[in-house]
Length: 456
Image (cartoon, rainbow, N blue to C red; front, side, top):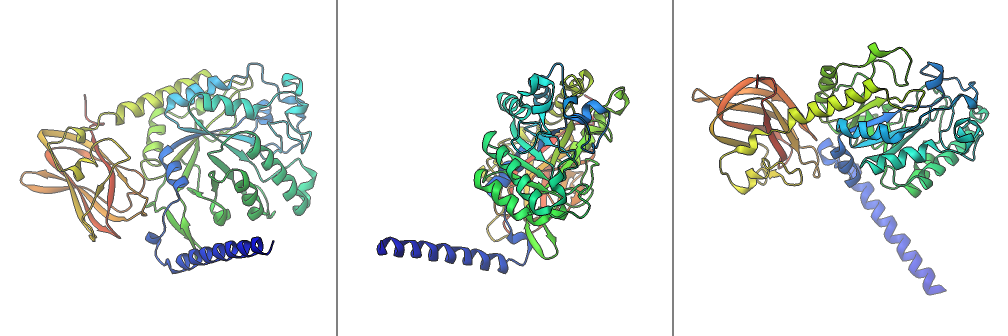
């Protein structure tokens, strides 16, 4: 027994030492470039495009935010088919979905043991159904990762008036979801509408991590300390600023990639009848994609099944159009047709995001050049930085050799996960990514070129 106790003491001491070393390392990291992503964050950033699904009593009431007073029996889709949703979502190019398991009205789309305000009291399947389970199964059957949104704000539950009691209620709901629905790629958290209510977010994250250690937690800047990813700041679908993955909020630094959320229908997250005019044009969706994913962020598009439990035909068609357009725009990488080059350079041109070009050791500036066998026209560039060692590129140019001199096409700062640059069409046999300043040895996963705006 004594020997067992000594071994336990050594283990605890070793753990404390390790934790102490981590704390020292964190306290010594004074620059954002000293911070690096976790493996879970880099894997999540590679997903790039997700969809969030809003479906519940609001769907049947022609409203966006319910107050929790609607009858639990009102939820009754007549033709519920999540496989139809997922096929359309998959066709759009999305890689993951987040299901709103409970919105602000407090209505639960799974048979929770915490409240009767759920589908247990609905007419759908005589109260014996489970929307969350069927959506999760359909997502995975279609090759999509699955996550959930569990609203902290709850306008129905009486316990909400008592922060301590409600924290226990919320954590019990969360525990059901994180234990019974498989691996979760993302958990959405926000403080929308909470009106000063405080939550036990450390306890909530501890409960999540007990069962789902790899889930990415999305949280807006108000909940900054608790998130693995952050909100872009609005629902415009764009990042209108230089996007750095490490952000400072009241002196607290950590890798926080940004996720940009925007609905497929302007201003509407839930379905509304007689609302065809709100469906966003394809060109607006492409612009949103190129200013979110193409600006180093994650793109989260909101879709909403109708009262039948189906995505409307127009939404399905638009999602297919989106996927086809993205495929057409970014499937023909002209840089892949480069002249023979060294192995290091070739790794940035090979279309394989698992390989990367490395700048010379110890460098803070470098050039990656591509040469074509004949003059080639292009008007877009897509650059991906290898982020395992941090976001290092701080300023760069894209240049084309024209009339015997290097012509600047783009000058900008952050590259990050992915940067899409657009410029007037240029024809050249030589083009280069000129890294003017980097905080360390720059590494580039991909440097691709496209002729998108030019007539074909």
